[in-house]
Amino acid sequence: MTENILELTNVSKYFELKEGFFNRKTQTVKAVENVSFVIPKRQTFAVVGESGSGKSTLANLIMKFTDVTQGDIRFKGESILTLTDNQLNTYRQQVQMVFQDPSSSLNPSKTLRQIIEEPMIIHKVGDAVSRKKRVEELLEVIRLPKSFIDRYPHTLSGGQKQRVGIARAIALDCDLLILDEPTSALDVSVQATIIQLLEEIQAEFGMTYFFITHDLALVKNFCDEAIVMKSGEIIERGPVKAIFNHPQEDYTKKLIKAIPVISKEEEDFLASIGV
Image 1 (cartoon, rainbow, N blue to C red):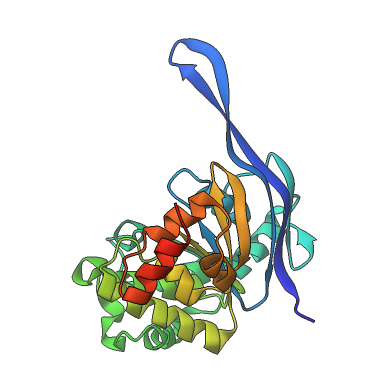
Image 2 (tube, one colour):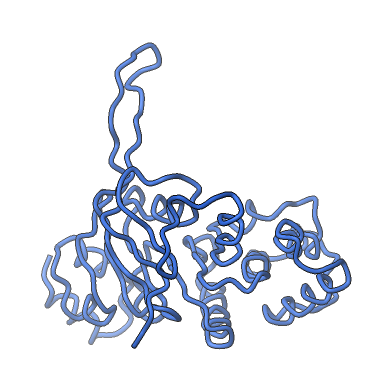
């Protein structure tokens, strides 16, 4: 029986925004509305939608960067909503995040060693010698030379920076890795190498991926299950193959039609789904 690593039940997140600088009235913005899903261990689960659909808010809720308005989030069967500080520290060792823009997510004043070992220092893992060894091992995992250990981010390409971001995220042997548009700031050719690297890491370490994207082309070849979000709500869900082959919602069909066509067969299929 497949175990679930993450479960969201009727999760909503509302924000109260002032309607004007001098106006005391507020407007309720429903960033996420009544969202439920489960993610089995060692699978890649995609959240697909355009900007403003609620994807990144979901990631922030799972990371506990912000609190839910209502509903429940369970990690390995335990609710994360009432974690103590010590429990939250343990939780964040198990759940890590790779950010969208590798250039802005890496501290330009720190070396790769300092960047990658930072989570280990924060969570008091190992000593200086063991941490350096771990950093060298992670550089090997992400296929960067060990000689890069004392380099600074500005000396790296965009793809190399994202590799470092991945190494930092997996430094603590996390179980769930949240990938927030991890390839959107990269060239298409570099995107493919990052996805291949993530597939290799998942196969080797058995991680579960929560993959946030607006790019259905990536989802098609990389993910197992997916939900499609619009205006904070789930409008379609299921195995990736089912969503691609038999999309039910017009919004999903439009996202699929936005994928660049490569072959005549794909062109004919897109014509057959309407919209």
